[in-house]
Amino acid sequence: MPVAASLTEVSSNNLEAYWMPFTANRQFKSAPRLLVSAKGMYYKARDGREVLDGSAGLWCVNAGHCRDEIVDAVKAQVETLDYSPAFQMSHPAAFELAAKVAAIAPADLDHVFFTNSGSEAVDTALKIAVAYHQVRGQGSRFRLVGRERGYHGVGFGGLAVGGIVANRKSFGPLLPGADHIGHTHNLEHNAFSRGEPEWGAHLADDLERLVALHDASTIAAVIVEPMAGSTGVLVAPKGYLKRLREICDKHGILLIFDEVITGFGRLGAAFAAERFGVIPDLITCAKGLTNAMVPMGAVIARKSIFETFMKAAPEGAIELFHGYTYSGHPLACAAGLATLELYRKEDLFARAAKIAPYFENAVHSLKGARHVIDIRNIGMVAGIELQPRQSRPTERAFDTFLKCFDKGVLFRTTGDIIAISPPLIISHAEIDRIVSTIGDVLKTVE
Ligand code: PLP
Image 1 (cartoon, rainbow, N blue to C red):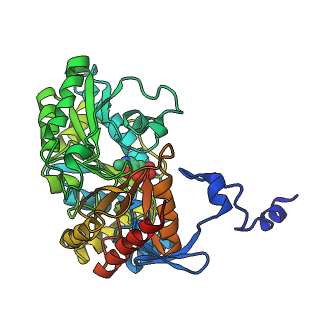
Image 2 (cartoon, rainbow, N blue to C red):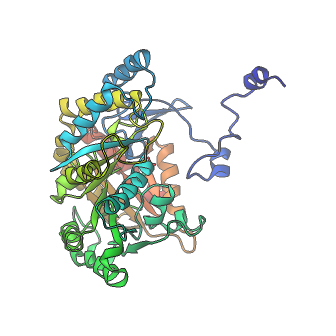
Image 3 (cartoon, rainbow, N blue to C red):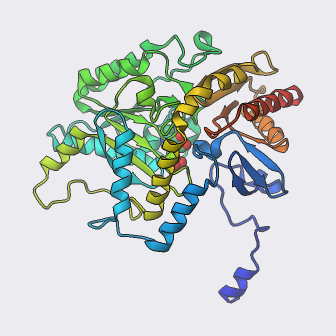
């Protein structure tokens, strides 16, 4: 059949060809959940129902959906400059956005490398870390350390330091030299914590175990999420990140904060580094950088790291052999600039900090609800952990998700954990609606 004819025969009712990511494809296609439009706090489903967005898309639409300011900026950009080569060429908005991101990043993290996703940001940061040690004459530092239960995207680098078994087990040996410290989740000590759990700063000492095993001279970097989102909202215990920083400093190991979720206001500050008062050497971010309107990620590096590369390479030489065709894409930069301006104008990071106590009280009101074994939260993120069904993990939370979606409330589940991370513009009434819907549904879920 000619291409034109075969294309007209394909309608959006044909769900077969799309191999969906991180989705039970056969189950989804038997009862699809399709969203067709969005505005502010709400999606519209294909059947016309309004759905309250309790997950900011996938932790990314921090300013709410289809905000006019960002839509207009992207429209204007696409009509003016659709694309500019990213290598040995660029365009003004990329520099402007880098300067604005650097301005809100903590301390001297003031150089920005653009990517197109969180996964690419992570792999970029890991490569920068290894190359940094090489250019400063410590090329024996090649090991990369992550944490059990960590999520750092799906590139081979991010998988190697990631600690979610289902994501790792099908993909062979991954990167050689990657290792992991233990995770921080402990219901015996920390169940129903509000904010940073009291117990567990000493868990950072696990890094000393790896130093003793491998020797610091072989370790390039440690990467952690200050609040591990995708694995089920695990907030770093009080003092843990500070201790990790101290151990890294003692041994000359770089500390990377993966702030793909925590960046841009989620915890009530521009970055979790600021919220926790701990300065990493590299920050990875994505998601809220453009309010998810155009894909974009970034690595933010300390001045000393950038300067080490600049000084090591001869004049006229490329200092870092790394980059993407779409690094600093004009549409993403336009979306990023408009997004940062919206965050500033509406003071959304401060707003998140201000409504966080209301959100905290609301989610913790579910303590005692059927199946609930833990509730934890920080900023505008909460995790509600359910007792898994015997021999059928994940089903109970997923059933809760499906029933809530039917009632017009969307959130994400991971394992048997419900994760709530709404846009930062959410109202008190909308918080109440999310919580009461979950409470009602839990009464009916087996
Ligand atoms: N790192 C963290 C902490 C994340 O939460 C995610 C995605 O959720 C990623 C990396 C990967 O980002 P992306 O899906 O944009 O590749």
